[in-house]
Image (cartoon, rainbow, N blue to C red; front, side, top):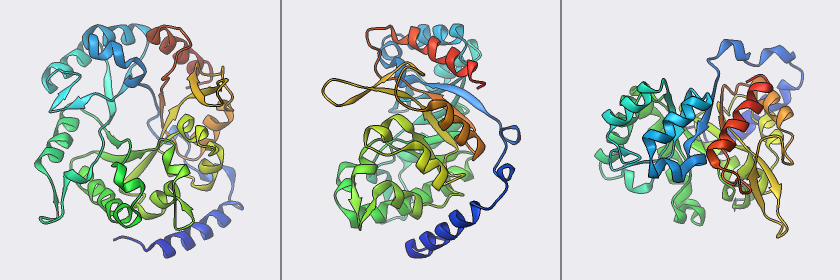
Amino acid sequence: MQTSRRSFLIKSAVLAAGTAFLPNDLFPSPTKKLERLGLQLYTVRDAMHADPTGTLKQLAAVGYKHLEHAGYSDGMFYGLSVKDFKKVLDDNSLNMTSGHVVLQQKHWDSAKNDFTDEWKKTLDDASDIHQKYLISPGLDDNLKHDFSAFKAFIDVFNKCGELCKSKGLVFGYHNHDFEFSTIFDNEKMYDLILANTDPGLVTQQLDIGNMYSAGAMPLDYIKKYPGRFELLHVKDVIKKDNGKYENTLLGKGVLPLKEILKTARKTGTSQFIIEQEDYQGMDPVASTAIDLKVMQGWGY
């Protein structure tokens, strides 16, 4: 059942007010969830497309156990069949815990009130590779400008959550920066996504670097919406001379990462996924090794 936006916002406000008086240990403890530390393969995107087998072997040697892909298309993972890609993972004791594939309007057949066979195959392949999370990182461009179309499509998110649940998967959404700079009905697009998706069907993967670049503070959202961010993209950013931000090694940027991670862990985040998109001249694989050691040093 879809809760009306007005009703949802009222209930959320009441819940937020009430949590201010609750004991600190009421939120989920990390010991009660299966916590994972992984890597988003977009960090080593060029290497993955050039030599997926060799790159995965390198990441395993660095010490990674859990991965998140960003290279699925036409029934293939980085150009390999599901069977072949799964074998490479197994040979290197790697788990493909989650993956990014954009849920687009073309994947929903409104006439049939059902998802297309193409999207259903995406879910089947995710299941076959033993993913737990299927994450949609973005929206069709027209949805960023058409409020009515956006509202209608967000309900498809809930339907996808139901379909994923029936297949043993968890559906989620991953933010970039536009969700915080796009305003509909005097509210940020991201707040509307949170308000109009069922938390039991659609989880959120909060990308703290992307949102910070748009002027949104990760701690503000984590505290305002406790329990909504089951997954976190762990990034750090530096400000360039042109005023724009780019990624850097964890702990070398401007984000208060230790506080963000501690608060996220306390309020229900269990999947911490490292992603670095810029390297300041360093080798991407070497950067992943440093980032992993930093996170392990912080107790993850």
